[in-house]
Image (cartoon, rainbow over all chains, first blue to last red):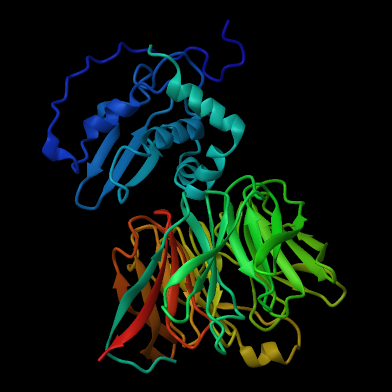
Length: 154
Length: 349
């Protein structure tokens, strides 16, 4: 029984078919939004045994890259308006992506507009790098993040 | 006040490598870099250590003199030397503040201050070295009294900020404390003569203040102006009537003088005002910028102009910029790229 979960009955979608991406040795510096998506689509939701993709928290459209400015924007959609796991999802995204692109790239993570009751306050917390760094040093949060990142293939 | 009207250049003197994680802060030892004493700099990092660097006088190159480790169990976020240069305070995400003393070339942790409920974000000594202020994510600001024998006693716990407090800075000459926070405000704290500290003013959006987290603040040498920087992408200058302030006749408020916007497109983490009046900023776009008061200021108040931007000062975010206390234009910067850089700002003739 799913007792105590904030959103006990999430809508689960089928996994989207994976397209094999070609290995282009000359594209080392290019940051491909679809490649980034591949890195994060299978992150497990903190509350449910499904991936962020399956719960439509993330989709290919979630990721936008501005190569010229060196910016990556990830917009995700929490399953419900009062989701309290948004900050954990943000931590998972940052931790998973930390070595995935050149160091000068900046990553901004936000909830999709209108998708959360405390949108502004959540977005502020998700992008305060000092708060993110401290959270990832917290053993309890760290363990939860690791479970989301490293649980076995679904 | 700098008199050079032409161009400036920022020369990288050296890159200090050694930390194995991002470097959050740097602090120059105020008793060094003068009177033939080689300059000394401390840096603190996500690698849980503090490094002390010294410049070799004959070669002019910097080397790591000491690594202060095995004390903090989490990120060391802030470091500050006492005015005498004899003690170094370090604030950590492990919720403690450590006090270090140089004992015959080795740095020893002589005291550990506990009290904050969670991450300590900033430490600062007052001008006389008799008080130490700390602040953190628990929203509080602590004032500690420095007693003989490296003893520290909590003098006051200041509540008022409604969120994470990012930095504390004492006024350069008076025992007035400024703090800035994730709650978008700057608070000013003073003592009423009875050892009772309280908030005497809050600089918020209503009085021309910031609209997002205020990360840092710095006083001008005269102590009648303060610069603040924020996640709202602006730098703001505030001022007070210094003559009234010095006369000690009750509290004299600070007012917004000027906002510098359009110069930064990502969070500004650090600002520092030099002896000569040059404001350095370090930001999340990897750049370091310099501002001075413009002579075109109107009757409405001073205006400032940017005299230089070094776009790729570091490979990643610049977390801290600090002018050297010596008779030079040396600047130290700390970055997410794990390095500290020593720069010299030179006029181009």
